[in-house]
Image 1: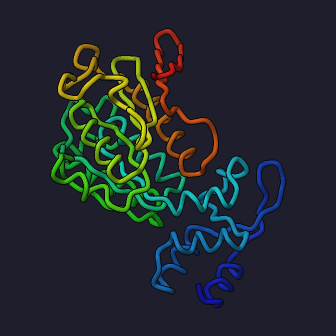
Image 2: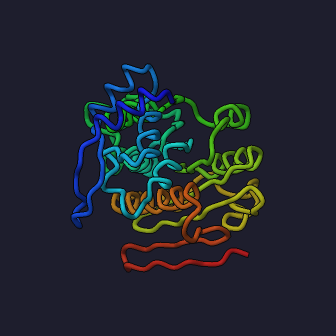
Image 3: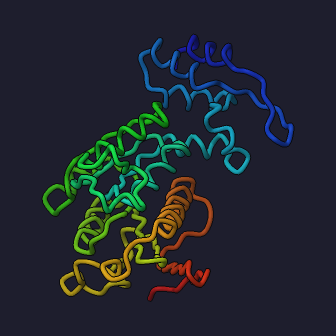
Length: 285
């Protein structure tokens, strides 16, 4: 980045204090937008350069001090694909856009219908019949214009999976059918990227993280040709607080993968039952 852009970032920086009174240098959303327009670059580029020069974009100030500047840059440098933009996917997109994932690739061939209103954050009464992928992209832009967002009004299948996952660092499985879960897993293995997978039924949910060399979904569902199309949600429904809870756990796994910090649910299955307020982690073998 040319020196004048760095100088402008520093010129626009304001002195602020964290809640614990520690001082820091901050740059506002409006100044990032202005510099992005002036230098014909993305807001994400400005934010990364600011962080490299010890200036924190104010939109991420409350990510600190749990995150460091290096941690935030890692998020801004990351490209994440979210497959399925309903209950799980809508909440995942909301969180990842706010926390600062630099590039989001959003995939779903479905459109909103009345029964989605109980749990899908992207669905409103005015958005019924709207393509979920388009609504997700609009929501990301409304939250964080610095993010690069692409969307596809398509269902992932064996023919398009390689193209749709191209250039992604990892994928988040927010689907409601097992056949497509296995397709996403195979595509991730082929691209040599990890995948975070969750499912919800009633007030329960489960979560795992799969790396390319792992057996993955077969340890949960068995062989794909024997797995049912749908899981237990066909009998138990999908309760909104369970969906949101599991989406939050998916995002935690995504952040840990990107930042290379924390303990992952790799070769493990987290099972939560919010009716009993219980969480178990099983070792998959």
